[in-house]
Length: 363
Image (cartoon, rainbow, N blue to C red; front, side, top):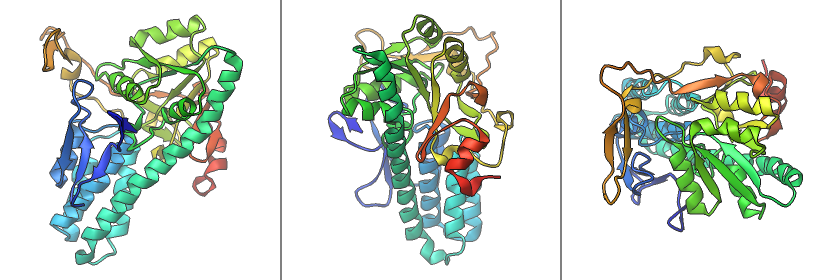
């Protein structure tokens, strides 16, 4: 998507093709910085410390991490060690495991000397395929926004989203934002309510993205969504996913479940944008999803730019003696989902709905 008017991806090969360049999400929205990553340790740290984030981007970065590892040491033992290091970075987004499985399945049969170039090519293909999935999600999701526009009449469609399921999180286009970008480009009047999404404030990334692309939007406090739904100011909710079970439970950024409850109570359609790489076909129930518990420091501190200041600063919010819990995700049960938007179409959030679109994975 656009960065200062230029179309970019959130992860791109370097000029020499031996590294990748990523947009540093930790610096946004206060500054735009591109990082060059060229080693296994770089990739692992970028995922763990959330220089990059979002389930599809985590998978893409893990793929390049494997490529960097086998370029440095192509022995089978080194490949296994690289896989273990990357797998330990973050537990919830299933795209990480998926990408590691794809990379290792392709590389293990190859002679060590053939692994380096093959790994880089496959990592690049994983990125391209992820973009294609998001483009398809955008096409299928556009029909939902167009239907909402028909109901809205002369006013814009008002879409609420949560966290950042945009191109920053998915190489390009995004998952939940892909239908929004498609609608904007098609001339459908649209406005987006952007949840701030504490404690990491990923909503600021969504607002930055939408601003770069010229999509009308308004940032709101996390607890404002239910109020807006009660007053008829939300036509449609579209969120992303870090892991969706084969029966349609959706694990996404913490706070998604509360938005789904409010939407269900107020009759507001609630969809998740779900690329197939984010579906965990091995589990049926959301209770089986491992929920990442992140550092309490993310709740204790907030980073921002002071009035008149040029550099962001961290501010302590919570007294040292106060205990802090920081679960990073929650699970929205399928009964609260209106449907799932996948690259193959829109389906019910049920085992049957997903199996109809992805028959090869049907139990």
